Length: 325
Image (cartoon, rainbow, N blue to C red):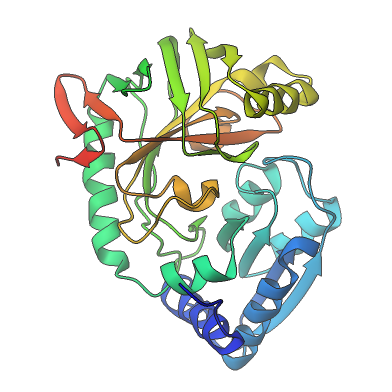
């Protein structure tokens, strides 16, 4: 958008998401978990909830250090007591025990790390059924795949073992049933790799959750499912520092392979949206225990690659960023 969205536009887009994506009804208990970086967005969601006559509570937590860090225990307990939880934050709570416990309790959840006002107004009022159909096609293919190969002109050549793993993302942004959850904006098919026989190099050139927009590509070497080298400039050093801060070797686990499926998303330097862009793929390091993997650690950070060529076993799925299925 050329001009910043107005308050009315922002509230209208938030209301659309509450109704269409989360199915919020009058009288439902809605909890907004936010921090100082997303106060205006949290306020817009609260006003939209009030327009729908929901019982809404907004709680602010300290800005977390990295994606996957647990929130305060009192917040985790409030999440369990809600029917709907909205999480506009600087860092993601998606891959936390708190989110998983709330999901298991039937809470509907929208995770929105680093979301912006412009992103909300541009990407929320879209055709979710078309996105969902694309995600489902790719997820079904991933379920039948043993090895994914990712290549790019920047030097990516990575083989990812996904044998006997199940793909995720099929909700396609529709979280209106108990226990459904996901990102907004939505639109990715993703899977947890098997560590054995997952090796190679991938080059992140769009954005990385640890650093934001990429100026100098980050080259990550993977051996048997773990990142063993991270090369590049200042941004690569920032990523190395963040992983070292965790103090756990499992932070280097290649946790996720995913493909963007949202034609309305665009590269903006914020991984929440970048990883959904049609014509991209992403690979994450860290935790994957909650979507079919075997590694639990307090971090999950994605890196987005543009214009990849991707094979599922022998089938060409994407050719330099053009989806073929």
